[in-house]
Image (tube, rainbow, N blue to C red; front, side, top):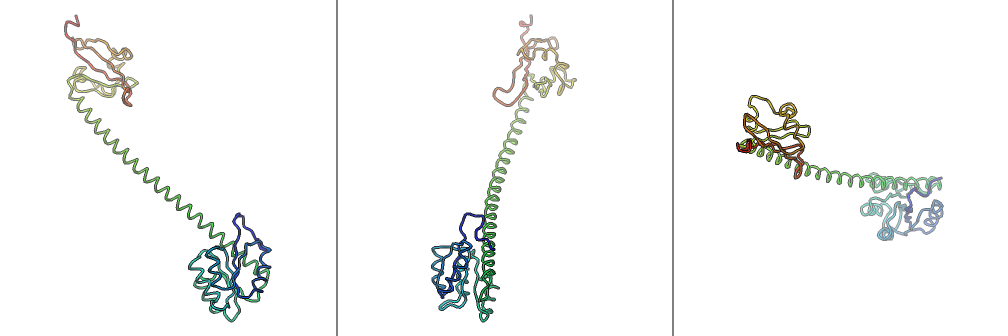
Length: 275
C-alpha cells in the first residue's frame, strides 16, 4: 500500500484536473484514502487559477479536455510552477503528443486510461516522494549556500584581521628597530635583561663600559655582573667600574607595555659622592 503521509508535518497537496465530473469523483474517492489534501479543477484555465491561490505538490490531469489539453496546461504549469510533479492521464491515441511533453520535461509521467487503481496510487505516492526529495535537496543546497556565504565572509574577515595584524607587526618591528637605533646611540650605558636575568640587549655605551672584549649579550647577570644580579629586586645600587663609581638603576618593565624583565642604566657619579 502506498504511504499517504510523509515524515514532514506539511500536508501533501494534490490537484486533479478533468472536465468530467464522474472522473474527478472517482479519482478523489480512490486517492483520499491516502490522506492527500485534494483540490480539483474542471479545465486547464480553472486549474491555473487554482494554482495561483493554492500551490500544490503533484498535478494529475486528463489529456483530452476542451479548450486546453492536459499537456498544454502542464506546459504552462511548468513555466510558472516548475517544482510541481506533473502527471497526465492519456488514452493510447494521444501517446505521441504526451511522449513529446515527457521528453521536454513538461510531464513527469503519463498513465494510460483506463487505469489500475493500485498502480495509480503507487505512481502518485512515488510522485510525492520525488517532490519531497527534491524539496529536501533544495533545502540542503540553500543551507549549503548560506554556509558557504558565511564561510566566505568569515574568511574575508580573517584575511582582513590577518592583514591588520601583519601591519601591526610590521609597524612594531619598525618601531623596535628605531628604538634600538636610538638606544644604540645614547651615551648612557643601558642594558635589558629578561625575567631569568639573561642579558637580551645592551647598547654600545654599556658594552664599552663593561668591557668591549667581553661577549655579554646572552649571558646571565649572575655570571657576568653578579652585583647587579644580587640587587635585582632592590632597584638601585652603587658599584665601582674601572676606578669610577656608578649608580646602577634597575627599572621593572611591563607597567605600560607587554615587556618583561628589567631595564638597567649605569650613571657615573661625581667624585665627591664616591668619597
